[in-house]
Image (tube, rainbow, N blue to C red):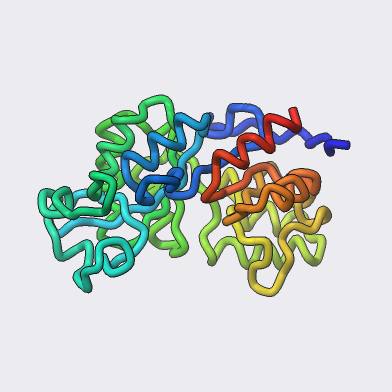
Length: 261
């Protein structure tokens, strides 16, 4: 039996307005496509993904560049950093399958109906990320987050109407409070957020315990779990009450959701 999800309070940003559960295509769908490229995003959208999870660094000339790693070694075999290249130089880097690095502007403009979950990976990336979101009028279809609370908060200050999920500094007290069952403290820890996006275990706490999920739901935030690629585990997590799956295999997750509906 599929567990009925409790209603949440309205999301003022509108980012979480479609029906749950949500599938976030982690760096796009990198099946016959390099991760975090326009082709990977196109594959995810073609599979039916409404949400894409991605990452942003800054180029040497201040463009918001889609990239997970600060260094090109894993994706392009270079020991140089993203921030040592200009935007134009990064757009010439061969990532395979005819793809190169793309900008956040190109991704948002190229997929205007898609919602993006953006992890700001460096302090230098904050300003160009804000500028891009504002210039394209994309604030209602973007969630901005970061492991670092200063980066997350700075991005939200720049685009006050944007959605945001917990940084590490916000997540840890929220988890402790949820473990102790102190609802007011959980509410305080997640103020201004629409979700916690977490691995199954964080800070030594199994986040996917039904009791903890209910605590987060009680204060109006969703629980999104990363990175889950096994369909059986996806089904188990959704049965526990998780609201979203962040996955490298959005195609498989979307099929899981379709069969459950």
